[in-house]
Length: 549
Image 1 (cartoon, one colour):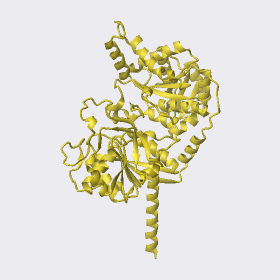
Image 2: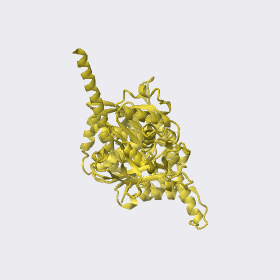
Image 3: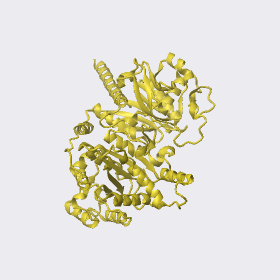
Image 4: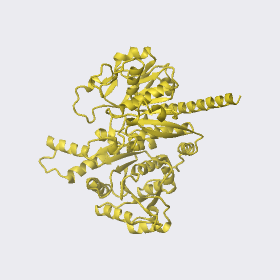
């Protein structure tokens, strides 16, 4: 029988429930268990696909085309296994399903209520992954914090499941905060006590309490938490602030979180986790030999979660290259032809990020032009690739008004235009080109060399595409369409000849980079940044020697 672990949060949001859930799953996986993680979000949006990144961070896309919470990215990066539509559920999706069934007459005239109908649907979705018989353990992260009105149906569903399946098959991990008051020089447990009390008042009692803290928890404090919160002392886990999220699984292993969970679930301890590749990655991450600076050009740079998968992919690629990647955030809205050189000249590489809408577009185009003309390694993702095409059409082909019809519907040179299948779509939610699609690479291209093969599969999230009417003109001028979808002929990748590294992808490679399998495109991009830095040093030394002579 599949075992179920629920991760709840108290006191405040952003404590890292997703990282704790992913770390526990990683340790269980290392002990020989198959594990997966799902996220239940209490907001009423059906999915985060139409949310502004400032609202909820990036929208993460799975192979099967689900637009999901960014925590699913953490799950995949930690476990190195793909997630799916079933791994992310929102209140909106739950209510939509129940209301549709009521309209169909599925409830035989009964009054449809939160209990039992909404909670039954939550329970059904919680057990969906377990019913596939693919997983020994299913971990469910409940979004929000205990006490939120919108979270109550989820807490009630957990209470019912614990009663139905038994304590040996269900486990609740409660993540809470132990604040340190500098004036008093004391760690305070009262917020945790109140959080646990509130959870217990709703009929759910935590089996394990994970305490986020800036200072170490001494034994007497752990005993106090255990006594007042009615758990065993060994079930009070210290989770101190880590230098990297990838260090958390090791910290949780030291704290024996996996051992406590397995004992409570009455499961054998299995193999001792070795995590050899994980530890090798951490060593390279913590002790880099070199450093490069990558400019991230975007319009949501104030919120790091807006580009979470890109930032993590650069970390993975940096470790492979034994290089620290310092990301310099550059707001595209404030980039102009006049200040581009000043803001970009000291960069080792430029990455133009995805996005939607016209705000900051000209700044992205200015950054791309500078990177192209100054031979700075360039990587454009989705909108970044589209704007690379616009920049090339304007400044190389001479079409000064070239643009995407997303920003200028009346342009005389729509080098980027709306996909044919998108033209009659009125509803915005879940209707883009989403999920994994095949791409055939030109065998002679840099891309084929990077991937080591000519047929790849990558994830998409877009409505607009390269206009194939401009293919011949682009090819003749050196911007080659080296990757195409084999069934539709859509251009997936463009590559500039005669440039050290200039690649744009319509797809989002950042969604598939993991600790154990860093994405080859990001690895090659960081390597190109290193090579540029080394070339600049050699040129500087050469000029220095000339001046001395």
